[in-house]
Image 1: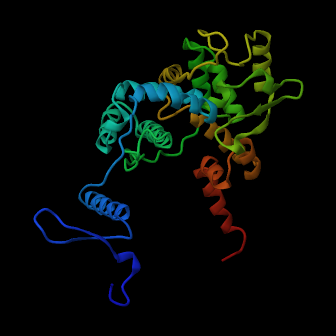
Image 2 (image 1 turned 180 degrees about the horizontal axis):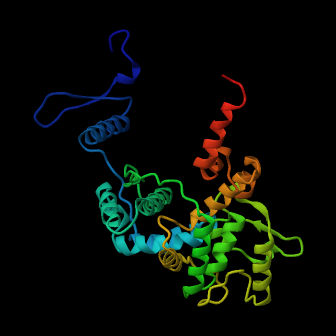
Image 3 (image 1 turned 45 degrees about the vertical axis):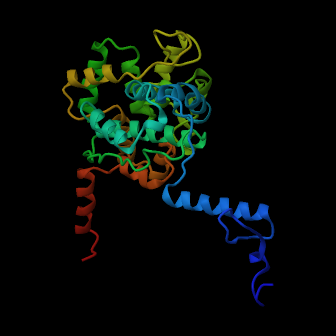
Length: 341
């Protein structure tokens, strides 16, 4: 009999006598329970010494990206068409290395190597893709944790506000006419007169161009707010009407090399034209900035500009559509006449 107050669970269920004599007591209500308790205690001791990590059969990086991740991205990501080029760069870098072999240092080394020949913003886009790929591998149970989760993006220096002057625009358009690059001059004019993003322009389909009503519908843009309708002015209407007469396929700007595909990024041709026109520090995206700024300077209200650009908030629009130094000076000068002093 156990002393009064002892738990029944800790009763002496049985006793065994080893060959050397002496009594060995085992705890539990049965021999089976005692063995189970002993096994549990042994497992706890093992876990205390070394955390047990389940082994995962992780595939090579290129196999996962070209297979499951590409299928996922094609179905779920709006920017998949432009992302394909970055995925190719990533698979070339990491190749046949298994996902489970990658460490945070591999991510840091990737940043170092990419930074040698690429701008920080470009490297950050690649790193963002890389981290997302491994997060999806975690979701697919191919990794227990994302090894690149702690890899930070590079600091991107702020660029000075830049818009084209009318004289620079004329030089740029003249240079575009001299560069052998399909649709270059047309793309620049559409950007300057609609504020559309580069991807929105070159991904435009004829089904979204309403020539009779002079309207362009932008779908599948960068954000939900990117879905919008943009009126055509005379310049854009004449350009698209001319392209309609010679259309080949569903895209307004079709690929000259691959049938039924859209035109690729004219980055090389655009930079050649910029150098030929001797315009410093200008990107294709600055054409969108120029569009917004010119609207504001001509008196268009900021809400209308926001809707035309497809921005989700007014703060972003204000950053693009700055008033300019001259306009700010004129605004301050008005204090001399309103009698507020």
